[in-house]
Length: 286
Length: 286
Image 1 (cartoon, rainbow over the protein chains, first blue to last red):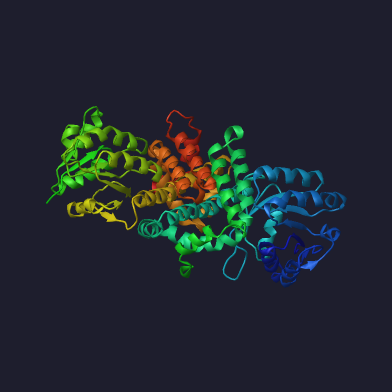
Image 2 (image 1 turned 45 degrees about the vertical axis):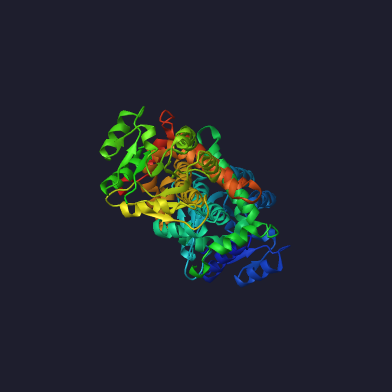
């Protein structure tokens, strides 16, 4: 039987996942109360149906797709409704959060009586050419895998709850961390008159890095505000994963990346950074 | 006319450069006083001739190829000899040092009356299959470019003194920084049971990263002790390159990388890190 899905909240990733599901015959409910005009428009275009929070409690699956900083608040907001529901939906947290934050979300959801699944999305929003992998973990992860019959690419991990979020943190740490690292060095090269020479040397000896810079940096700039808290989640995750509960090296690295993305995400910040980058990025190649 | 070269000190990179020069008809002098048996052996195999420090002062070019932490000490040690020489050699600092350290070395050398050239080596030591680029900068950089007639690949940068070291810092920051970053995330993945899943996802969506891990991490481990101070030079360089003299984000990142390499460079450190890495690295692919 086709599962019904409640999806919170319809940002770019959430709406694209919803579109994919509605195209494959799944009813996708969301709550548009208090959402921006743009979100409402996006939800409608994705074929989602506006519903009250109580109505969402009658879905089979509830997908949380929100910015990292909102993942726990959402669980706390929904907990009383989950607790009051006769048959609450399986709550799947698909957010880019550390295993520390995840454990807090899991606790809130389990205490409400609902079933919990750990998840993480890797890749860009679904489109005609691309499909992200939705990794899931936990006893009830197979509930999410039912969506493989409805247009998604859901992969069940063998590990316990936490391994999907750990995978997401590690992948994002490499991918978004490399973009941060190349941005830092490109800026320094440009500021010290070695920008063109650096590009030349990279083209010669690390051509894949030039591809990453030319594609990745311009694509990152408008998302930096969102990547900033994700870097902090990764720092927390690294501490949690390390023996003894601290990874001083990893924390220092990701606090640096967070600071960079925070600065780049501030549109009001002085234009020097953007000017130096613009001079050194060949965005005709993207 | 073939220039005579004094080269200090014959480590792996220095000896390979010397070998290349002696194979191309250049006399390469070095001082072996107080050097280890291994260094002496390496110098002889490279065709270098042992000489007193005073004899080195009669060479046309003096190449400093030492670990970053020794670059300034070497200049201070040689300064009185340079000052006492009628025609001191052109002093070329080829070390991986920040523009801050470089400025101190330059001051010492210039105060001695010798001519100074800024340089940076990018790539592995010369071999039958590979040749590093030796970037040089400064008024007298062309003096080094004469070695292009004797088997080396020397490239003169347009910028002022400092731009060769800046280029080296930026390139090393990207290359050795990416290896540090992937090592941090691979460790965290392995520790949280997501190691195999991470490799699978990287193979799918970022195959060049798997290549970097499988080649780069095993090759890095025996060099981590040497990369550790280089990361600190890069942190200093980033501060110097930034407007206002501080790059808090960059410094945090490279202090993290330095801490990682310091730990990996300590052979006595607990084996947990090496165990986790060994399980996840496919070194049959290297």
